[in-house]
Image (cartoon, rainbow, N blue to C red):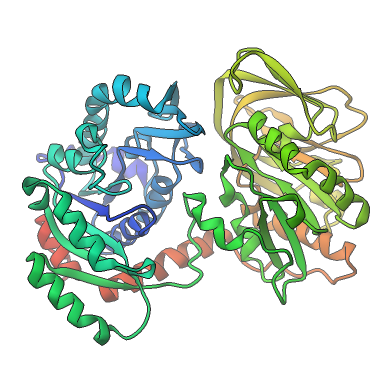
Length: 535
C-alpha cells in the first residue's frame, strides 16, 4: 500500500481537510474519524488521519520504530495505510498528576510540567504541527483531522494547537460530535457553540449525534429545534454499537471491566489484570476478552483480586510509582496468597515484567525525583535499570526451544515453531542474574537477523515476564496458552476461535456500515469540496 503511495506524484494542490471535534472527551471522535475514513477508502479515496497533539498512555509503534497515539495507528489501519509520525506529531504521555513526557515525531523530547508545556513548548509547536499536516496533504487525497477534548475550554484556547486554532490554520470545516448516551446532548451542542468566537462558530458545518439508542422519531423534534436554533444541520444520528471490538485509547473504557469480583457467567477462565493508576497499552488484553471462554477483569484494589486462573501485571508509564501503588494497596500479599490457593500463573508485560524482578535501579532519576533503587516483587532473578533513552521497536520471532510456558497444544517440541510478533516501548534494560533459575520465552530477530532471547520465566512456567506488547494478538500462541489454563482446571482444550486481524477488519467494516447508513456522506463530501465516487 505505502510503497505505491511513494511513487505517486505530489499533488498540485493540498488535499482538502475535514476536522472532527467533540463537545467533550470520549464522545466518539476517534471512532467517527475512523468510520468516515473507512467509508472514504471504500469509495476510492486515499485518506489519512491527523491529530496534532494527543494525550494517551496507550500508544502505537510505527513500522520505523516511532511512537504515536494509538487512535491514529488504529485509524491508519482502518484507512488501509501505514501509520507515520506525521499523523500524530506530538504525543503527551502523563507521568504524574501535572507532568508528562513530551514525544515529538515519535521520539521523547522532554519531561515537562503542565505549566512548562504551555509556556515553553506550545509557542514553538505550530511549525511542527503544520509541517506534518502539509506533508499529509501533499501525499493523500484527503486528511481527516481529529480534535481533542472540547474546543470550548476557555482556559486553553489561547495556546490551542489541536482544536479551533488548528482548524483556522488549516482552513478546515468542522463537524461537532456529541454523545447522547451521557445525557444533555442539546445543551452540550448549543453550549459549545455559545462559547466559541463568531469566526470559530462559522467553521462548524454540521452536527453528529453519537451512541443513540431507541426510536429516532422520538428524537426528531429535538433535532428540528437544534437545526432551527443554530442554523447548522444534523448530518447524522449514529447508533450505539454494543461490544464494538476496536482498540480504545483512553483507559476510561476500562470502567465497566473494573471491580468485578468474579468472572462473567459462562466464562470458564478468569484472568485478572491489575489496573494501577498509570496503566498503559491495556489493549494488549483485548484479544483475551474476545475469547468465548475467557473473562478479563481489571482490578484496582487488593480485595477485588480473589483467586483468578492468571494474574497479569500490565504495562505502566511509571514502573516505580505503580509498584509503590501495589504495595500501598496490599497487592503483594494477596498475589502471593492467590498463587498458593489456586492461581496458576503470574505474568508481567513490560513495566509489570520489570516489577517481577528483584531490583529497580534509577541512576538517572528517570522515574523518580532523585537517583535511587527499589526492591521489586522478587519473583524472578532480574534487575532493571531505567535509562534516559527509550526503546520503541517492532519485533518478531518465535517461542524459544525450551520455553517454560505451560501450553496445551501443540506439543512442547512443536511449540518452538510458533511465531510471535509485537512491539516494545520501555525506558529500561533488564538483566538476568541467574540463568539456571529461569528460561527464556522467545527468540527474536535482531537488527542483523540474528536470534536473541527475550523474556524470562520460572521452569514450571508459573511466573513469567516479557517486554512484548501485543503478545496475545498472536492467535496461535494465545489459544494454546489459554488451553494450558483450561487443562490445569480439567477442561478440554478449544480449537483456534478467531483471527485477531480478521476480527479487526470485520469490526472496521461493521463500524463503517453503521455510520454509512446513518450519516449524510454526500453532505460531508460536499463540505470537503469532493464528490462521492460512483454517485
